[in-house]
Image 1 (cartoon, rainbow, N blue to C red):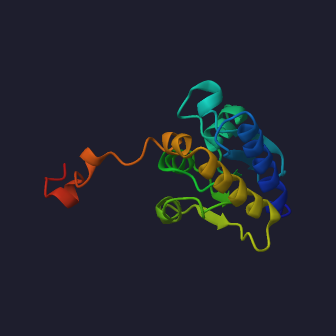
Image 2: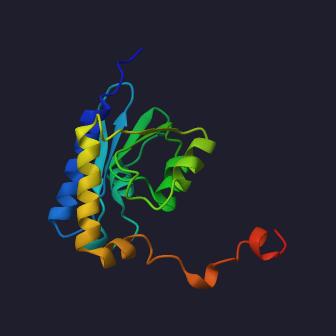
Length: 178
């Protein structure tokens, strides 16, 4: 049986990616994909909304892009400095990641994506900032960015809720479910 992954070590790598993105003027969210059997880093990256003008290159997506083609991701772990959004959560579930390790859930709006992943069998580990210096740094960097650039934070999350879509879910609106 392979040795357990060092979550602190790999979250620190993800944090370094987030810090790189922040230092480039972008959103401080980093991701790292690790092979569970070998501990080898397969891909890493950071949010590139500002750097590339691409709204879908979040930290997790940048790590996926860097990892490139793989037969599957069934024996890997995704490390992410911030709780994944629904776009990244959907990618994690669709590509069969069995485990996600999160550095910061404090700056997320809700636990909805964590519940979504867990409901689909993904092991979700949230590092405790009281015992994880890397998690503590993830939380502090994201909070700092949110204070400094609230408009960019909102843009990265899709511009906020669309008020015309409120109550449009069939279960809420009474419309038939197809």
